[in-house]
Amino acid sequence: MFNVQIHVRLRPSILDPQGKAVLQAIQSSGEEMVQEVRMGKLIEVQMKGNSVQEVEEKAKQLADQLLANPVMEDYEIFVKEMAL
Amino acid sequence: MKFAVIVFPGSNCDVDMYHAVVDALGEEAEYVSSTATSLVGFDGVLLPGGFSYGDYLRCGAIARFAPVMSEVQRFADEGKPVLGVCNGFQILTEAGLLPGGLLQNEGQTFLCETVTLRVENNHSLFLTNYEVGEKIEIPIAHGEGNYVCSEETLQELHDNRQIAFKYENNPNGSMANIAGITNKQGNVLGMMPHPERAVEALLGSTDGKRLFESMIKNWRNEYAYHA
Image (cartoon, rainbow over all chains, first blue to last red; front, side):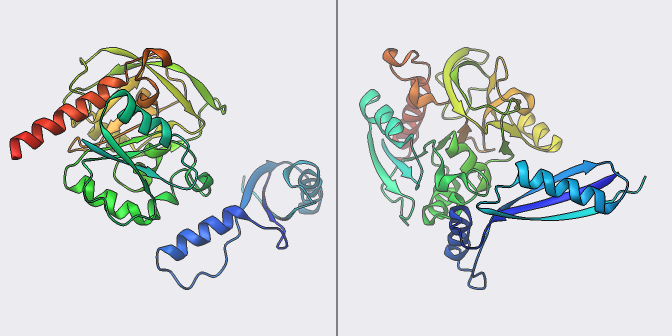
């Protein structure tokens, strides 16, 4: 079994109102070190498969078709083999 | 009695709250912006429902940093009445004025209906006009009203008689059917159902009116006692 994490976030060119609201909340608390906030989603799935490559390929397909909207979102996939 | 109705960006039940205390109960109220830094001159604080700051990050999470919230904290610490309904309840938990938190409804749908609540306690200043065990009809309208807390907190809520209302038929998966709780001192009440929408027969129920009447009566008694 493989644990697959798919991180989805809006493309850098797209305004992220959630991130903006959170940034403003942080800055209004007096914090000056934080300059930018981008919000996203972490989708965790468990998959069976024969290799990391095979699972990664399938996860990419899922991300393209359902989990992310490639028009406005980027995603990253992290695959880890689970200890039995 | 003069109420402050706190208005956050995204509050949408502020007018209902104002209407309840001014038109249905004949008291005074003023809208107070979330950027205000003083609540001097007010006798009670009302945190209305809605979607403060778009509910980004988590419901109520950003609202707790609004300038007015440190003043709400001070107000509560002084033992004055603070009522948070729906998003107002979520804000109170995020601000640490009430224990626990609110998750998405178990059935994953937004719920908008009238539900039956059981009055669990009537010793807090909000509830003296109810009988313990009484069944009342109050509307709900929320997507994230599933109350959660640790087992220890739940025990404390029971032991300190902080549970104000329980659902008769749990609509959202809340732990122990909890619909509303108070703080230990009993001057802060948070609840998911909307008592401000049950203050006139025209609205389908007047069961919420007694909550406001309790608050007003108890404030008057307290005020008369100190004066």
